[in-house]
Length: 175
Image 1 (cartoon, rainbow, N blue to C red):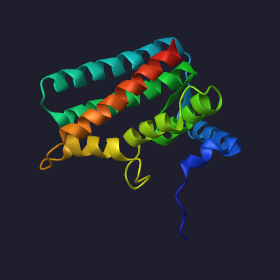
Image 2 (cartoon, rainbow, N blue to C red):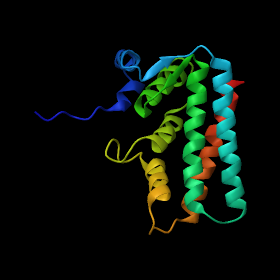
Image 3 (cartoon, one colour):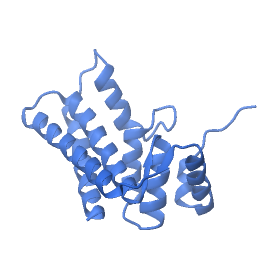
Image 4 (cartoon, helix red, strand yellow):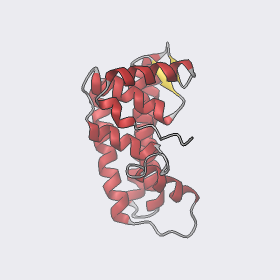
């Protein structure tokens, strides 16, 4: 029997499936309830901001575009964790993180758009899980572990613009 891959996009339309998925992740301890929400949320946001400072330093020096891509990934990742932690949860899994963002910031609060969540997904999921949206993470992995690929300045700068926008939106939501 061939099992089809889960289509996470259903979470945008089907609240029951979204809630069932969220409860599944809770039961599997991939989403955990957190008590220190203010401290953890601020810590993740600070880490995201530090990552972005590093990325901007690299950009100003016009070098290491591979590390700009890697830094963008971590900026997005910690921004997403800051948002989830503010709601009283932490995540141990990329799909669980995505589920939490859709639940708390697309359905319940409307702080994020589908495009925002897709950007997070770009930085989270591997190509085999969702090929179209896997750009940032795949680029991060190639940037971190690849040895022969030249990295494109335009690619890194485009991702940086989207990363800054996402971090700014995270800041607005957390205020």
